[in-house]
Length: 114
Image 1 (cartoon, rainbow, N blue to C red):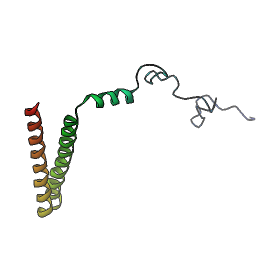
Image 2 (tube, rainbow, N blue to C red):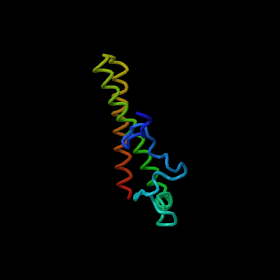
Image 3 (cartoon, rainbow, N blue to C red):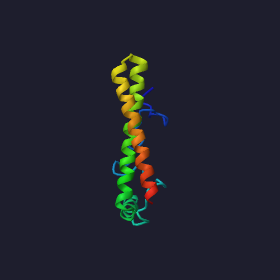
C-alpha cells in the first residue's frame, strides 16, 4: 500500500503536460497552411476593392437602419407588453418601424438605380 502511480483516466492530469511549447491545435485540418492559398483577409480586401463606393455605402446604411429598427421596435413592444410603459415603448416602436421603412426606401432607390 505504498504510493501507487495515478491511473490513466485521472481527471486532474494535464493533457498538455508533455511539451509546453507544442501547439495543441497543430494538426487542425481547418487551419490555413502557411504559404498556402490566399488568406481570408486578402480575399476580403480584394472584394472590398471591387465593390463600388455607392454599393458599399447603401449596404452599410441599410444594415444600420435594419438593425436599429428591429432593436427599437422589439424593445418598444417589450416595454409596452411587460412593463406597461406606453409612452416610451410607443416612441421606440414607432421609431423602429420608421427606421425599417426608411431602410426599405433606401434599398428600393438603390435597386432602381442599378
